[in-house]
Length: 245
Length: 245
Image 1 (cartoon, rainbow over the protein chains, first blue to last red):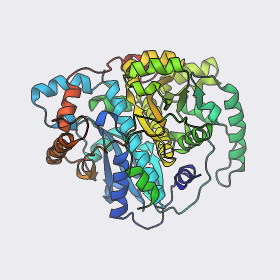
Image 2: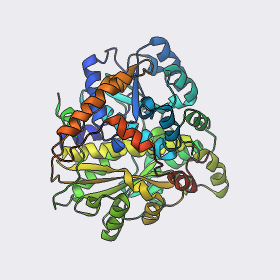
Image 3: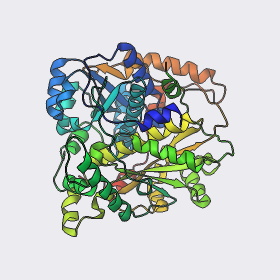
């Protein structure tokens, strides 16, 4: 197993950081690595906002309900960005573009482009001994995050990422078995694999050193989906000119 | 610069492969690496379908308009998958789940989860000397691809990935300058950076050994968005129970 695979398999989300800043040079390399990822039809349909302003970090920590967001880690917000294609268009061209730009296809493209870049950034950061955590909970109040970042039409915040020098070493969370996530030639139902995974997860939660509890994966998922969550994401996304048709 | 960063920065999309199969062991490692990526709230909201059936590969090559898809590379299709949370739910629970599962938030979550996994797979493959190419053009006929893969409700195909032993060494395509993609604390307009990038791209296309042409990045983007493209993605996505509210 080569050192790159080792690093990928060793990933765990880090939520406590030492008081050591991410250097400009590290950040430069991380952004370069992000940009080296594949991008759909050369669109590079994303932007990254680094948050250094303490007031903004504090408000984002409140929105995300993740106190460590305001602390010593570096905070990046990944945005879907379809604004650039229109920057130099004439009014007539812009009018023609909108129905084509604002469809679900390009909402998908920009989200995927941003995520590919972000994962490369994560891998790069971890290769330098930094730890990272994705912060999907910026979408707890996506409209306010959009305002904080001053995003124009056709740019929306998708998720955050905190990075810094790890100050803890959490357990790795088990993943679904390969047979439940990889199929050959066509999709296969895999209820048995989910049952076996639930048993594994129950044992994992029971044996965990912190936050020990009785829980299974499917129960977690059912709980998540039996109450509404972030139903307002739709509105903000469409208001900003994504996913309208 | 460590070897992981070097590998990330060296990425280029590979579209010609030697007649050397990807081994089961390599594939296992690639899928493990994919699964090691972060996942939103432990949802693991994706599946991967490996296509080995030659008839399916041939049809997918036609749909994607990429002949090499049917040849000697290994073909993976990454899917958004929100099917698992409902597998063991009662009828009543399932009915309660639907409005919460079928919103834009979870469409985003599943697309992002799939892309994070896919980028890890790409990095893992490249670390073993394999080359990869993302295939967004499976969405040229997303409904037919959905049929070919036999995907149930709440599972949709997002993009493909071809991988194998590289049989060419294409140029690296320039990326937007950091100043056009990374901003501190708030979004900044960057028309000047786009102008400078267009000049760079014009020179790049003119000097390219194959497919030399006169073109800029913003012209490419404008051409893309002045005609409708994959407007039917919306319908298939909603028909399958994603992005409905």
